[in-house]
Length: 320
Ligand SMILES: Nc1nc2c(c(=O)[nH]1)N[C@H]1C(S)=C(S)[C@@H](COP(=O)(O)O)O[C@H]1N2
Ligand SMILES: [Mo]
Image (cartoon, rainbow, N blue to C red; front, side, top):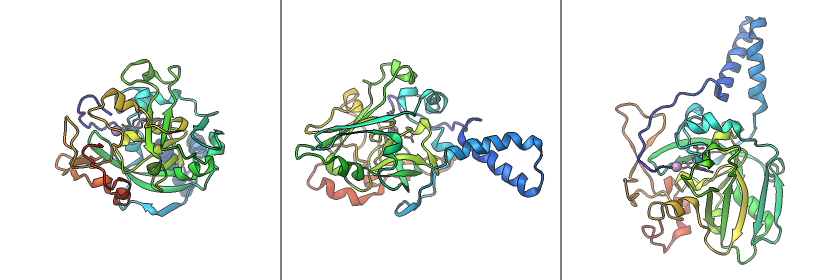
């Protein structure tokens, strides 16, 4: 997120991004087809194997596929917010390589009848994986459309059987200064904590996400598991989650603790409620950043009107 209003500057994909591996594979196939494969193509072959290792198959779910053109993989994996690795957009790509995502354990506890401690590979088999193209709108005023892979968070909630006291769900990200250089800075009150009301968490749109663009999540995008809540500002979608706790009281979230007048608990995308320091009425779609490109109008609930009933009778100016 931000302290100061940022200016978008395009960060070119690194030489080492998996997209580069994909490109190499394409080249390899091309050479293969052209019969021009020689010993010198051996290197691309190794790159192809590396790319295949991350492949994650999931059929697209048409009911959750936005009409938008997907953002380029290179942009989605190089222009990131993940303050545990630094505050610049390019920091996560540069520094998240130090995060070890196996073994990885997620604890699900609090107000549930069946608490669970799950290994990430077991979590990934809890429900069928599917691909969903969702818009992601950052509070900073930019957006993307990303083909995420995962399943509805409600699938997990069902398995742990929340008690009658479970009114909220709290999500905690890993905060290990040994693996995450940004955690040594005091820019946020670590660990990164986010939360949802339980009915929001149970909405089918709320996605427990383990992949994107046909492969497992890259570290900079929140590997091995993150949340994606497409009708809320991006910061609600906590990355690299280690704990999911069901609570009776509203969780204290990291951004709300840091700047309560700027970041509320709900944080629904709302073009009518300005951030105290800038309007939220428009957005820049990453990849459409040409000199003469018009900004897009931001849509209520980020263009997911089906969630409106969750907030009926609520003053969304007050509960921002
Ligand atoms: N743990 C953690 N989760 C986080 C953040 C963060 O700094 N730390 N940034 C948030 C913000 S502000 C946004 S916009 C999205 C960005 O997700 P992306 O980089 O995969 O597009 O992640 C969110 N999740
Ligand atoms: Mo954000």
